[in-house]
Image (cartoon, helix red, strand yellow):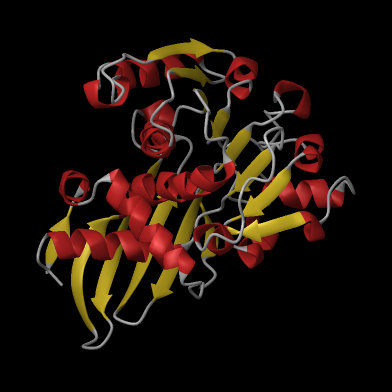
Length: 316
């Protein structure tokens, strides 16, 4: 049985491949299995099983916020992929690497359907593992983006992301050879872009309705627990809200749970889920519409990417 590390997964699966594989998966309206979460020394242990017709898998992930101060990755874990028919394990994969691929890929599916076709500016709020991945995935579906603004509560961390992206020729150069502009700005400046991706561990709203312009599309992927929050209730009420999966959102999407508790938003305002987006049922309706994709992350996404990586390595 092979172990596929971060580098092996990066070689095996490109972002465009991840986006299209997840698009096909969600268009078929897959079944979802709820994950389990456990407190572990102030962090979270996430247990995420998934099954499809040919494979089964489980991701064990530790999210430990104090690792930032230690210079150690906040998200670490592993994935065990099984051949469902034979019942045998096929591969063990780096769980954090799968997360860095599948979460931005899911956001890209939503963005492709919900963002304005002429979107030219991208705001990234957060400086963790999802920041660079979301820049790459957004450029896959909106290649005309010419300006990127990174906003974060820590300016030093924002500059670290800027350096990583600005030295990547693939990300910085458009199809026509034009060099994209990238800068560090305030959270408010990043929230004022055409497309905004929020990936933090905040427990208080960072993005408010007054920061966001008409026609903006937002991907909010950081608040995956009921006590976490990135978007204000006023912003949710002003927008069209799409979730990755309704049951998971009801259990885990802190932004939405808090807005319901404050009686400023309600669950019947959910416009649809990622399956509705992927099968073409749900699209942007008008230019000034504010659209919000709220993601908590689904185990089926990891299974799809794990199978892609294993197939590329000739393991299945």
